[in-house]
Image (cartoon, rainbow, N blue to C red; front, side, top):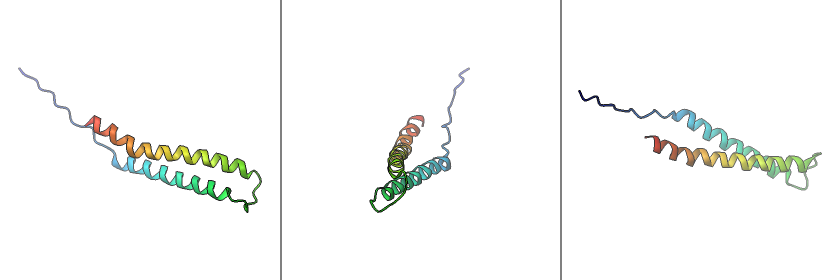
Length: 81
């Protein structure tokens, strides 16, 4: 009466992962572009510094998220399999 238990690896949702990487990359690119555009002296927008500052913060956050989704998820999925 030997009962063997076999575990099947959890399937990876590659489409969702690719979607997260794409969204975070485009968000980082967009916020970085906005930050760069508002950094020029010739741009005459009220509250230019506030827009520049917060878009820089958001660009940095989304860049780290993008890197995390690319590199971090590889390590998580390798451990599970």
